[in-house]
Image 1 (cartoon, helix red, strand yellow):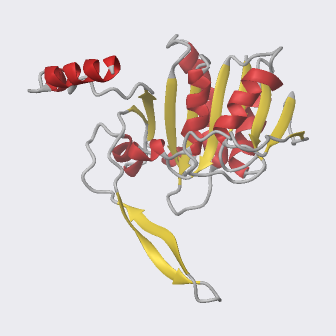
Image 2 (image 1 turned 180 degrees about the vertical axis):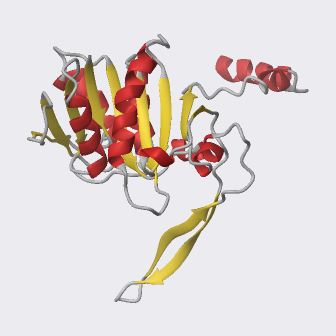
Length: 269
């Protein structure tokens, strides 16, 4: 299987190194890496439109086929890889990660890690985002990498389709302390955050976003609940965010027909 690996922590981050190295040990996989040349966390699904993208082929430890770093965002990396860099060897699977930190609930809207996987799904390549949720007991990237090496085999049997996006979160614990694997829905993952006002040496004001996640109030079916109870969460995500339950309510709004006539008159003018 040809697997494209990207991330938002940068090409030299320990998470992507652990994942690529472990998957490349399996002789049935051809591993390609295209990742940002620096950290690009919380960039969401941004693309570089107003300046050139620069690409450099790099050497990484392990048995990877080819590796590139780019000056772009995580979404840029996957789009560029599939459109240009891997043109003759298109990937069968995109994996983004292993991210250093959680991507739970509403965090997926900001996450560069999830955005890279979503770009793969946009381009009709099955894609997985994987993140490691720090539990304050060190970094266990090797555990998450080993889980992913096994999960790929299970995942392939599901035949979920080319636009599938799966979001995986693994607690940063030794393997023998992880209490299971649960298929989940996105939680709330609200934040008690605020902008801290500071001053630079020249007396000018600037602001620094800070705060922490609110752990309470998550449903037992959510990804956040699973991670809080030392379980791995596996969450299917659809990028069509239409709220179908609201469609009939909007369609039955009083006065909507008159607005349609207004639009028709505007076109006539």
